[in-house]
Amino acid sequence: MKLYHSPTSPYARKVVACAIARGLDSQIELIPTNPHLSPPALLAANPLSKIPCLVTSDGLALFDSPVIVEYLDSLEGGLPLFPRTGGARWLALRQQAVADGIMDAAVGRRGEQGRPQEAARDEVMARNRDAVSRALDMLEAEPPHQTLDVGSISVACALGYLTLRFSDEPWREGRPKLTAWFSTFGLNPCIARTKPSA
Ligand SMILES: N[C@@H](CCC(=O)N[C@@H](CS)C(=O)NCC(=O)O)C(=O)O
Image (tube, rainbow, N blue to C red; front, side, top):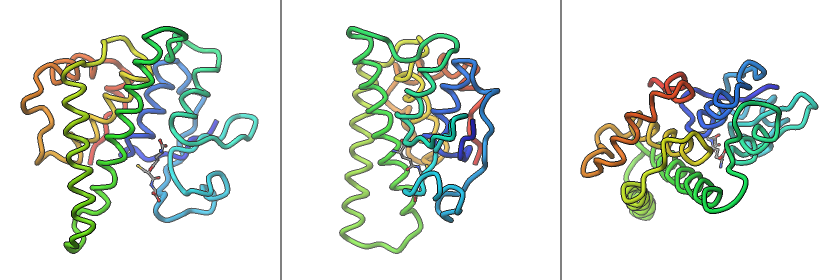
């Protein structure tokens, strides 16, 4: 399998972390990719020019990250990352959704950083900042379990991205439970081995 990838993309990190957690990472070749340059190989696989994009061993191109991690979960491997039934399943899926929402808002803000001020856009960026703050408060009220699943891995990747790109807006402030959760959860090899550096 081939994965169009960048080490600083939180979505790509989620995919690689899930692959490591399932013992599938050795089957995946990482293709370093800058999606903003729209490289032809990526466009041929994903017309949206976004990473991550996984090309399976059958040649099927899969995106976006929730689809890829569900595909990885369907392969023979270690423990399943999608709880099959019951409350644990919906909680894990909701955590993935909250984490992906944090990534969407934070990646959007990051893309706009350094551009000239413009009122309408600044308003959207402020909404993104507030959405992240509220989502973090939700996670503080109910942090994920230490169990490895798609929800906890996604949350860790979202927090890792905030740590990397928004060090001037420390998400840990006023969120002791989430901070403690992240410190312990971050010791898992799938999270420790995928930690991004600027
Ligand atoms: N919902 C997608 C989001 C992927 C995404 O936005 N990736 C960014 C990199 S962090 C990207 O490829 N951006 C390129 C672009 O927007 O043109 C997923 O979960 O995979």
